[in-house]
Image (cartoon, helix red, strand yellow):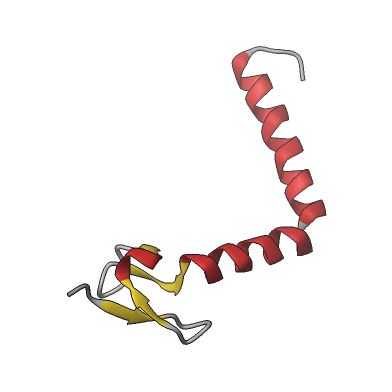
Length: 71
């Protein structure tokens, strides 16, 4: 018998293999099932697209400067 856990988002009871790893959680598994976690990540990325683009541009600039390539 596989252990089960309830997703904090969708309230479904699923097997532990449907949850990601979170070593800081008491049971070692994420609070949300993978499906809900993926959906939340998609929503966050869509809502923060300009911020993400800015971070990526700054990262590329720093990385190229550190590696000696032209920025």
